[in-house]
Image (cartoon, rainbow, N blue to C red):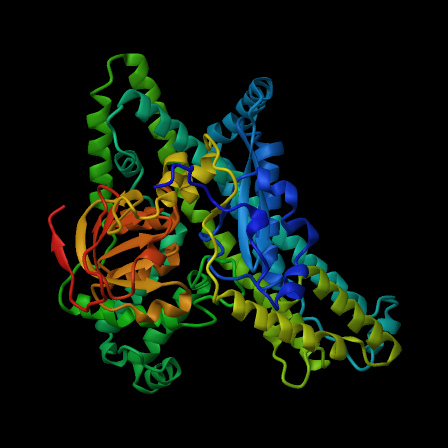
Length: 620
C-alpha cells in the first residue's frame, strides 16, 4: 500500500471536454482557471449548481459572489473570512474562500465587525422589517418593467409630446435595469444572511467549549421549530388538500393526472370546484412564486409557471387527510424539545456569568435564525424567477426577429452570456433604427447549437468534489455551516472506500434510523421517480422540495453542513437525514437497500445490487 498522502486533483489537471472548447472559452475570462489557482483549495459548489451551467445562468453566481464578498469584506467586515472566489470548467462551478490569517488584520477587522454587526443585532427586528419593504419594492419595480417591443413606426405621441427618445433606446434601458435589479437583490440577500450564520456560529462555539461532549445535532435542535416564509408554499399545498376534501372535489386529484384537464373539470363541477379554484388563486399569489429548484437555473420554473410540483403532492396529502393522519409540520413538538434541551444544558453551566452569556447567545440565535431560511422565498425564488421570466421577454423579441433561426425558441436566449445578450440587443437596436436585418440571425444560431451540445456533453461527465491542496483549517462560517466543508469532512471525502466500502459518513442532520430503497435523484426533473417510502439520495435539496417529504422515509446528500437547507428542512419535518457525505450519489446505486442513521451521520449500503422493497423503520 502506498504511503503517499491523499489529495484532490489540481485545477490544472482538469481538461475541457473535447469538442466543447469554444463553449468553455465563452465564459468570462475572470471565471477561467489559471495556473496560479493550483496553489489554492477549491470545491465544487454542487449545493447551488448541481448541473452544468448555461452561459446566461452564470449571472446567478457572479451577482451572488459580488454581493457576498462585499458584505463579508467591506460592509460587515467578518474578522477571519472575506469573499468567495469562483471558477467554471465544463459547466461546473468551483468556489474557494478567501481567508484572513494575519493577526493584525484580524484584530483590525474585529473592531470594525463589532461596530457594524452589533448594530444589526441590536436593531434586528426593525431592520428586518425595513428589509421586507425593500425587497417587496424591488419585486414591484421588476414587475413594472415594460415588455420590450419594437413598433414598425413610433407612435405620433413620441413626436407630438416632444418625448425625444425612440423605442430602441428602451430596450437597452429595460435590460440594464433588469441586470441592475438582479445584482441589487443579491446585496439585499446578504445584508442579513452572514450575520444570521454568525450569531448561530458564536452560540455553536460557546456550546462546544462549555459542553465538550455535545453533538452538532443537539446544538442545531436548539434553534429548530422556526417559522419562515420558505415553508409557506408547502403549507398552502396542505391547505388546498384540506379544502379539496371539505368541498368534495378530492376525487379529481390523482397521481400523474393532466393538470389542465383537472382545472377544466373543476370549473365544470359546480360551486365546490369553482371555490377550490379560487382558493388556488389565493395560494398562487404570492406563495407559488417559488422555484422547483434552488433558484439558480432558468429552467427550474416556479410553481406558478408549472404546477407539477404542488399537484404531485396533493394526492398524497389528500389520502393522509382522509385517513386521519396528521400532515402538519411538528413545530410545537420541535419547540418543546428545543426548550427542554436549552434548559437542560443551561443547568450544566457552573457560573452565573456563563449562564448569562448562554442566555444572550441562544436568545440572539432564536431572533435571527428565521431569516436564514425565510429570505430565500423573496430572493432566490420570487425575485429570481421573475428575473428569468423578464429575460425570456427578450428571448421572445430576438426570436421574433430571427436571431435564433427558424427552429429557434425563446429559451435559446439563455445560451448567451449576460454580456452577449446586451450585444445582441444593441445589434437589434441598430438594425431596427436603420431599417435593415441585424447580424444576429446568421451569427447566433450556430453558437447556440454549439452550446446546447456542450451542455448535454458536460452532463455526461463527473467532476471531482474538490481541487487543489487541502488547507489545514477552514474558518469561513458560511463554508462550514452551509456547504459542510470542514477539514475533517474533506478527509472523509478522500477516503476511497478502502476502510469500509459499505459505509459513508457525513453530518448527522436529523436523528432516526431507517432502512429502505435508495432512489438517486440528480436533478429536479427526476423527482417524479420517487415512490412512497424511498430514501432520497441526491447532491442537494432545497426547501421547495418539502412536498416530497411526505413520500420519502429518509434523505442523504453529497454536500451540506449542519445549517444547509436540507439539514434544516429535515429537522423541521422530523425526517432522518445525513448530509455532506461527499459521494453518496456515486457510491450508492439506484435501487440498492441502504440504512440511514441520522443520529450518527452514517449511511450503510446493505446490498451489492439494487433491490425493490418497502422500508423498515427502526427505533431511533
